[in-house]
Length: 357
Image 1 (tube, helix red, strand yellow):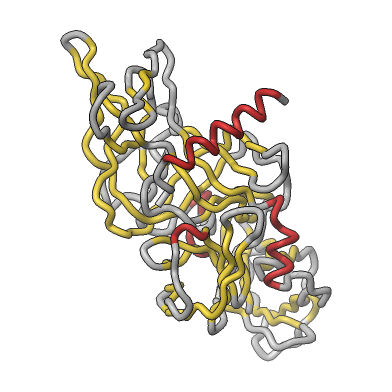
Image 2 (cartoon, helix red, strand yellow):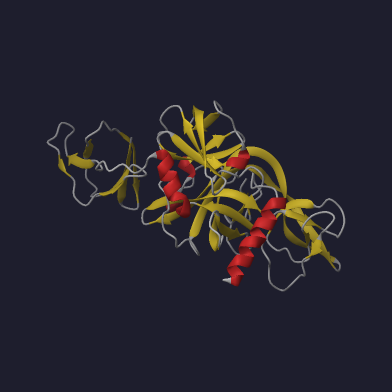
């Protein structure tokens, strides 16, 4: 318990003096065009499709008329939330009294929205993180005798381009007095080419974890470590660092040397944990409806007859259905107490996925 409390307090001290996580920086590539389109393969539908542009940062659609972001990115009523090529004007803000989370009501119906990760087992889970902001800049090098050793990369130009990356939850930081809880990720050199860190431009973007077939919103990008110096004096430099050893950390004029060790000491980023705030979120968006989910019917002919399809998985929050594929021509329709329409059909790993609105 002492360790947990100490970790949480160190995060708060850090976050007060550290720039907010305002774009995804990748370990494996500095190419500004890499990971700027929706991921495919086993990362299909892993969160990219639920993230929109809010000012120069991001928000995540969570209901037909709502998206979620963080307060410090700003924004005003009547500002546009750009989502799937359309603008939805902000009509009202709902600010979480316990965290920096902000829910925004928009005018119009968002075509897609993310389901929530409600479990508390995030530790060790693989994540996809989506944001927009800086490119990866020049190498950050320190002298070691006659050699130069790379420790990371300076934050580059902020271009506002949406990017995605991967990481893993390395810690769940809890406030012993209640309130905000954070998911912590490290920028490990061994994390693979898509290993991601955050930098100015990412705040309000989403962190997603897979549960069964579906990826779900588990966190909102909030803060990142990034202020370093090559010596005990001077203004320092902002960088994504995979090994802090040998660098000075803190801030001018109180830079402190981090002793170099044989092992990397990666910097970290933090996302506001969604699961403890689900009661507040659902209270705002009214996601407690007891209306039954739609039923899927299938036929071999467009004119019918249609019969109820067996073995269907319905995920109400994401408005999705999963259907085992039998490699035959089929026509689908939904049976519901309200008017619905199928908006997309995808085939992935032997399963047909339908989304509806």
